[in-house]
Amino acid sequence: MSNKFWYLTKQSLKKKIKSKWFIGVNIMLALVIIALININSIISFFGGDFSENTKILVVDKTQISYPIFEQSIKTIKKENEDAKITIKESNKSEKKLKKDLKDNQVAIFFENDKDEFVTAKVISKEKIDNTTYQYISQGLNATKTSVALVKTNTDPTLLTKISSPITTERIVLNDEKSVDENMEMVMGSVFPTLILPFFMLIIFLVQMIGGEICEEKTTKSMEIIISNVSPKTHLLSKVVASNVFIIMQGILLILYSIVGILISTKGKLSIDPSIDSLLTATVESGFLDKILTLLPAIIVMLILSFLAYSLIAGILASMTTNMEDFQQIQTPIMLVLLAGYYLAIMAGMFDGSILIRILSYVPFISCLVSPSLYIIGQINMIDVIISIVVLIITIALMTKYGLRVYKVGILNYSNEKIWSRFAKALKSKDM
Image (cartoon, rainbow, N blue to C red):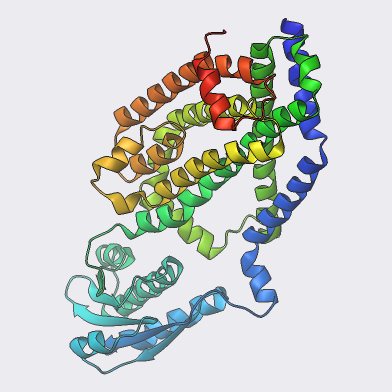
């Protein structure tokens, strides 16, 4: 029986890898991933531009900071071609500037300080793009150093004060709630990017295992296979082959991403400023620390979720008699997966909600929702462990009762509605 199991597994895996669908999809994926990583260059090549020009209005109460800051910004723009910043001095009062400030404008107030020589107040109507704010911070720190050198003869004590970062007060006029900007940016960009490949791999998994079983039933080759092996061996071979295939596909996605990054950086080790600022925000927000802490649990949940989706896809596909039936059973699986994806990326909107916490325990979507809620601090490690335990119990139940359905349905060619056939197979006592 073991030899038959491995033979079926190898044949199923070989069939997937050598299919035109696999080759075509991977060519498309490689092109799409490389294009997305290099989207800035592509847009620029056709004359477009992603970044909006930021206008900085400077009110200088020190009388010496503005020309130094202006020169610093010019130097930064010269070193970074993507820095879309213009700078202009203003004589308006703080109250007047706050009232007149536009979305793409930033007001900076330089003031004298006895201990730190100069401080700055940065005011914006909306949150400043992280890359742009990094440029502004560089200019402010350079300004502080130069102003301090002008004001005093440097000694070791003063040098320590001069080299320390400038004290900056951030004021966002339209921000009603205090939110960690770094974490908000990371959860809005990095996290959806990380879970998207997993989302895609599950779609491939469901289509592969379900489509293959449906094809074998449609061509009547299933009768020959089941006459030589048990339904249990047949199902498990499909599950193992499909999961090995998905792992291989995941590795290929990583390779495509590496190629895209190498093309983007032209093989150099230098990092694009926008990527660098995103990495900095990822570290400063604590996102990276939480991901590393949760990594073992995430790996376990991913593997268990792959098993759960492959089992449900195989069990339901056993009840199909044609491709129309397969589309029917595939739709609810995709809807559940899609719901999990959107709940994961919008988890921050449900702050304090008991419902979203309960949903983090639900199999098939817990693999997406639980990590998201853990990272933003709405659940703890105990909740994640509960999600894993519930997922294991679900897989055990699907294996027990699913095999019953599979055994009855695999050779069922009835014209009865698919969900009626499924219900009858579930009630069947024939094990």
